[in-house]
Amino acid sequence: MAEYTAPLRDMKFVIEELVGLEDITSLPGYEHATPDVIHAILEEANKMARDVLSPINRTGDMEGSRLENGVVITPKGFKEAYQAYMEGGWNGLQFDEAIGGQGLPMLVATPVFEMWDSANLAFMLAPVLTIAAVECLEKFGSKQQKEKWLPKLVTGEWTGTMGLTESNAGSDVGALRTRATPENGHYLISGQKIFTTWGEHDCADNIIHMVLARTPDSPDGTRGISLFIVPKFLVNDDGSLGERNDLRAVSLENKLGIHASPTCVMQFGENDGAIGYLVGEECRGMEYMFAMMNSARLAVGREGVGISERAYQQAADYARERVQGKDISNPVLSSVPIIHHPDVRRNLLTMRALTEATRALGYYVAARQDVLKKHPDSDVRAAAKARIDLLVPIVKAWSTDCGIEIASLGIQIHGGAGYIEETGAAQYYRDGRITPIYEGTNGIQALDLVGRKILRDRGEALQLFIDEIRDTEIKDPMIADAMWSALDALKITTDWMLADPGDDPRIVMAGATPYLRALALITGGWLMARAANIAASVEDHDDDDDFYKAKCVTARFYAANLLPQVAGYAQAARAGSKDIMALSGDAF
Ligand SMILES: Cc1cc2nc3c(=O)[nH]c(=O)nc-3n(C[C@H](O)[C@H](O)[C@H](O)COP(=O)(O)OP(=O)(O)OC[C@H]3O[C@@H](n4cnc5c(N)ncnc54)[C@H](O)[C@@H]3O)c2cc1C
Image (cartoon, rainbow, N blue to C red; front, side, top):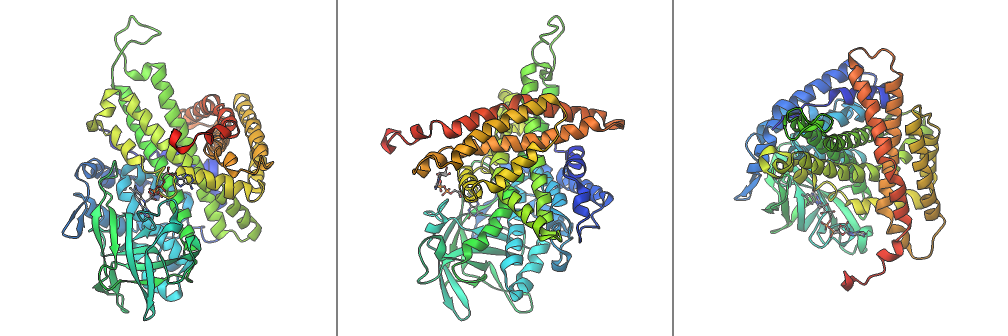
């Protein structure tokens, strides 16, 4: 099985040339992120991916985490890898120096984390949730809570979790039943959370659960939910660890992939009640949790890119080595590696084009996050926020759908060997399969895009984005034609959606998923077209000639093969919706 090597050349191209590092490092507070510093960080992150995380990916999958006497034991090497991660100061990469971080832009943190998603997705889930907990507490925690909980979450000495899901409350978070009863200045939490990622483990000294629960007499639904900090160990005033809190992992889920990541059923308050501390105000928990979820949704989209890259690298390696069949242009010669066959090359280029496009999208949004955080002009910040809000569901849903489609193509390229576990190709598919499900299923993302992000402001944020795409001068005429046709096709459906096509909201929502795919393909196509513009205009290619040539080829492939799909998806989004609702439930 091939080990992973970070696609540093493409990452640097997207960061520096496509998204524009200078625009970000000229923001106040990011001046220290010079290209030299960033290159050094990317090199070090690559070493961590290649030498520490990738080697325990397969063994972690086979061994899995296990629960013994209430303690979760992670697979061999995970504790040491987590120690190396923590000691390297990686957990605080994007956090302000004022709270113990390194103060680097998201545009730098995103490729670093993408490498580790590729190298070992199961491992990376612990940092993802810890980082989301830091972001939430930084924004909504009290001064005292920040002082108490943030320092060790920022270093990674403690990890964080997200406790939303219960057996009767999945997509419908508002149905949750966990109780929080006020007592002596804190709350007593009781209830069961399922599917808690890294809910219990042996890699860190403490685990800080961010738990949603209901206070007495709170209203039904999401309006009655509050957010609590519920630590595994209570923490004394001097920062030392105190008593064990009343919570434990009662079982681990037996699942399709990410076997090394312990997915826990957590029981809170079996005895007196687990001590929890209210974040912000009662009944505003969903609002606070959304801060955590947006960060986590972008991170999950990045996981999709990580899976895609890893699957692509392995498939390309395999296609260069596996000898099978003759070259159809010269059948008298002996058998050739399968990379000579046009159909295999089509699969590889599809994988590559979608990986590069979803990566570019993720980094583009990361840069908007940096602008939102640091830009001195409030109008510019507001525009960045509107763009992020519009694109979050696309990053989450499209990048993760692509992740599993690409992992599936990777298996296909391996033929039967891909279906056999030894090659590792199947693991990427199994591991990646959760990403379209958690953090709001991709169906829910599509509803969010159409309902909250487009219909709610009557398409204003979308129109600004489309105008920017239309204003882009696309130099390659074939790519330009494909893009303008795709935009025309999308416009017909957007106009139909906004024109209030009837009083049954199900009609528009039945098309939300194909609409998201259509807009996603356009967004990716726009970034690929801009990449082709840059690649074609670089006069002195030096040693990078192959890279820029490949970028143009990949962008043209995307325009010719993927952009035409927009018309089909856009058409599907508005036609056939009535049929989708026509059958009774029993008729399925
Ligand atoms: C490995 C793993 C790790 C996880 N980690 C965490 C974690 O750390 N913390 C946490 O809180 N949760 C976690 N989850 C839970 C995860 O977020 C939920 O599984 C997810 O939100 C979906 O909820 P559900 O499984 O109950 O599915 P359901 O909500 O029952 O959905 C079933 C299907 O119905 C669709 N659906 C449901 N409602 C609607 C609707 N209104 N409109 C259209 N379609 C709808 C969904 O898209 C889905 O296809 C994890 C789950 C897994 C499997």
